[in-house]
View 1 (cartoon, rainbow, N blue to C red):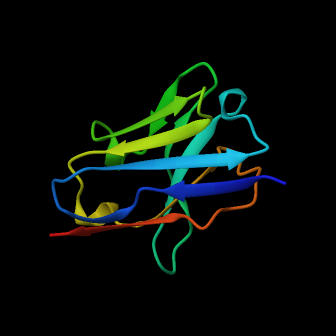
View 2 (cartoon, helix red, strand yellow):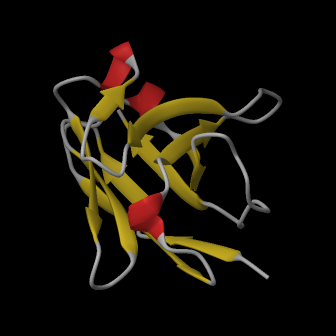
View 3 (cartoon, rainbow, N blue to C red):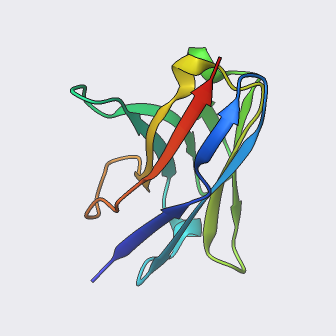
Length: 114
């Protein structure tokens, strides 16, 4: 059974940075298009960034130029580097495949103070 585990969230001031990590058992990230999603209370999860097996990336307009998704194949870990954080970036961040194939993990909370 696949279990996704997100980490790295926290409280940061606006303009600060965080690096989120996603690890999993029983899934090989490098052969999947992996993605990070964000969910605000009462709202649906929205796609933030994705990374194909070939290395192509895609970002939500709101995070372009500030966030970077990457993958460490040896560690089977996916990262989301978040720079120049804004209060509107706050939420619970989840990783999954772009098609949301696997059960959702618990996510990691990001809070940005203004």
